[in-house]
Length: 241
Image (spheres, rainbow, N blue to C red):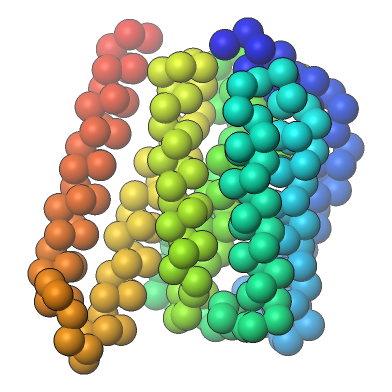
């Protein structure tokens, strides 16, 4: 646990200026994408997301998390997501077409990375040994929120990767005493349901086994189980406080 928090402190101390610049660019591009989603803005957002994932893979994991075990594996994981966005940049599988269905939740998810450090401060942590906006879980939740608002057509494999990572953050609550990740991980549960609900509904006309409606019921059950696990964990953590 000491190595984990020391690497975070070194990362924040060495990159805080860049994190501020990255956050400003993210805010500007997100506002532009919501207000005036031109072709140029959409391309710019995909390039930025590819860069953001590359930053996590190279700067965060490969450089600053080198003392941690399996840092190279995590770097490869985020490197795969870079390839996802570069592929999408040329293929256009994710057109960023606004649906307006889940704006409240998606905007909340997009804002959570900016709120992320405040939870560390409320726990009594101080810079640089605290969570920051440009970290793996915060980047994953930001991307999930962005995709949810433009969920008319998305790369379902990218969603699976991101949701998987957000759920990995759940384990940090126990192993590294970082309850901030609990909030990010739990916020991915309703997004997970909504993504796959849209995917199932779009395939209702197709013959699938099991049937699409059964898949929807199974999805609801799965999300309820995950939600119950998160709730039990939260109650357990609060009882210890």
